[in-house]
Length: 451
Image 1 (spheres, rainbow, N blue to C red):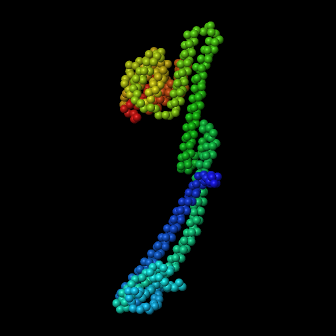
Image 2 (cartoon, rainbow, N blue to C red):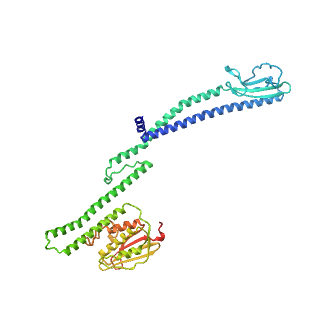
Image 3 (spheres, one colour):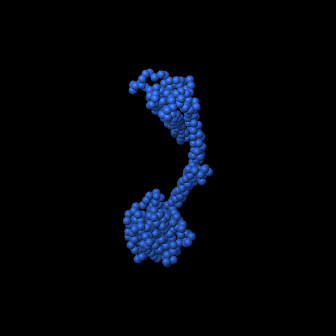
């Protein structure tokens, strides 16, 4: 039983089959309901029309009788007959019916109606009792045969009984064809997507020229493939650049150790230790920046803690960097964000400035127009106009100094930009008042940030 049900589910699984069956079921319900309502409406209309005509003619006969016209000489409409009436069974009493005067179209082979109280025996009859001053009470009735109406209703019922299944079949076939044509571009996109093994290959889905939901879907999927390709290229470039940058300190450490092992008597322990520590610190900084970028690329929303940004600047400025940091321009400033991420941001800015500064580094904070602004200035060679946009890209170093000792790995400012973007801020490079480099950071102040 379960296997049989599974086979049925497998056959009903395609969208084309399910949509076609849905259209068939809906059309069957709608057409059947419409046919039933149509037959009922036609029957009601025909019978109401017959009853209305009987009532009009009955009033006409009643008016003639009340004017004194004898029932035997009543003026009849064309086609009406006055059938012979049987003699009254006796004196009229409350227990005996009044004599019947029946008028109506010629009854045909079916004869006269046996029931004069409504729709019975194929006749529609309207009867009314009339009190004649001279002849006593009579029951005047007008009857019409229902044969033609019933034939019309039966003919329409037969036509609908044959037409509804035919219309359902035609609707089902049309739905099968139209759904198949509508899903053809989807199948083409599915086949095209199965052929695209690598989003970076440049192959994309064909966009139908229908300007509908299917073309919108194809455009959206192509945009997704472009984003995947861009992300894949960035990832590959990141892995390649990271491998290249990590190779340098590792190779330097290996060289220092090999020299120490090959010539132990000729090496100076302090110089060796200083060199190993320098390369280890460089490797530590590079690893921290790589880890920070990996976490920032996860697109997780930062924390929204209340942070004294000036305290972070003063705390990071107190770290030894080989260059004095002037903090006289630091003023109180509050922001919302992740304190550890903002500390990493300020640390990278100060490390970058100290790396290029000749004698000093200056930091300034101020709050203006709902924005906290941080300036980090140095008195070094400055940043060329052509490099001011690209210095925030990953593994980008100034062309003026590509030395591994002063050029860094090119990740510090990239981390700064990602942290600033996650906190709703911006960062740009400019020229300091001393002619060196300036990094200007803008973050939303606490009073304009929504938690």
